[in-house]
Image (cartoon, rainbow, N blue to C red; front, side):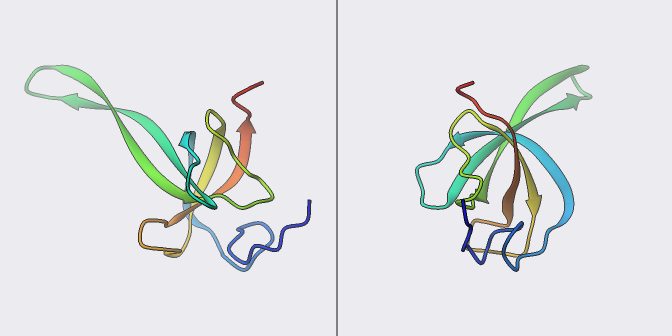
Length: 98
């Protein structure tokens, strides 16, 4: 599939920077945007135990990758693409329906 998206980090002109984040796609309802969720743990010193938390990040979903709900993806930081998007999907590790 040919990619004509100028905001695609692979075929377009957008550069990536910073760390790569591995996350799972939880929503793909918006056009060219996915919401990914990344779980992490925080140690609470007062109680002496860990708490599981998660962060939700909006990321640009180029048409050449087209990540769907349940897919495990790698996202990379980019320049600000919109009000809520500062990340872009760079690789789909595994499909959710497989």
